[in-house]
Length: 563
Image (cartoon, rainbow, N blue to C red; front, side):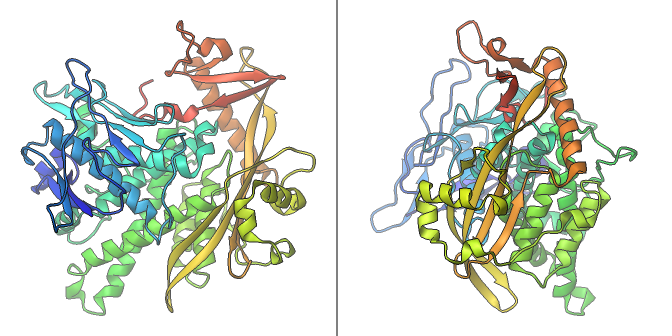
């Protein structure tokens, strides 16, 4: 059975100024069941009455007629996008389509798992009046708010009607399941990675709309190099907050970490930092698109515009594979942009060792924007042998925690785990992904093995907090199931990269000091409310044996930072 549902193409204002329709259809094919709400085994929409706060009846599921396979959800008027039934179904469709994009066999190649203990991601399309939206692990939910446009009091802005915002927040939830340790990270670049991946998820969802692709390319002459509805994130939301500023964020930028650069960003603000990484990767996407467009022209300049759509669709798929596969290779713990860059390089190099052009573009951007000191910082070794893998039983390694622990303990040197230090083994993954190579398609089966351990470092936050803090670092080992070759071995322990280590430590100091000064981080009992429950509006820092440990910093990653 499949279910056809309507969803917003972008947001109401984008449809208006682009002169295109607001809604397109999407077929959901891979869910076990459908219930009113909409509700499936993995996703549930809970809509609340804005006046009473009562849970409203969800959109009704209409099963296929006898002998048919196509179901629907009942919507009184698909042109009334502000009606509750349309909003419920559209936001559901956007979340599910975003999930499917990550799960495709040429991306992660597996069904997603949430970071929380529960089967369903809850979607609250009208969570209350506030110009914000966020994913929250503790409540298993996407909280999508609405607000009155301050520049047009007769207009209400619903974040659930912005495909960019819904895809962005879904991206946070998905990344939390892939790399759950990022949620507790104290490193600004780790949190900025969360933001950048969420924005790039919105970008890739925009590329998937045939209507939007056709409209944008027709208006730009077939290029995405200039500012468009693709590079602009959450335009309606951004313009309501600041009519002069346009969208909330732009992926088309020259932001950098260079301290003397006019386009530098604050190193302690994850939202600002994220634009450095997303801007770099968008620039790579532009190069991919233009390279494919030249290739598809086949010597006939008159075909340059006509092939731009195919080049964009194919280029977007390449881009998706590049940035999503790297998430599996990302080492656990406190990571930097450089760690993610190395994960991209490793994932691409392991699969396409002879095709270097996209990796060259990546290196160019990371060096130009001073995310790394030089190109050598992104060099990684892939597809190599190691004696520890020759005879290992990967089936047992995946299935048995004891076998995984014994493997890590015997191979501390390979994994970079210090002697006598306790470590944690993460759930192993047996994944098969589809690769497009010069000689055709090929499926590659991998074992993904991750281990993490704790370190301590100076905690220079003043007298209110302990003198030292605990951080987590770790290693990802990716092994080719058939050949036992190591496809990648990446570590977030930067002790062999002292310059990177020092900068990340300084950045942690800056951000934690700011959170403390603004009252957003509190030590122990100060993070508990009068009702005895932990405050959801602050980050809790605990102290044990003279070490500070911070949990849940990613809870501060709303669509905008309010303080």
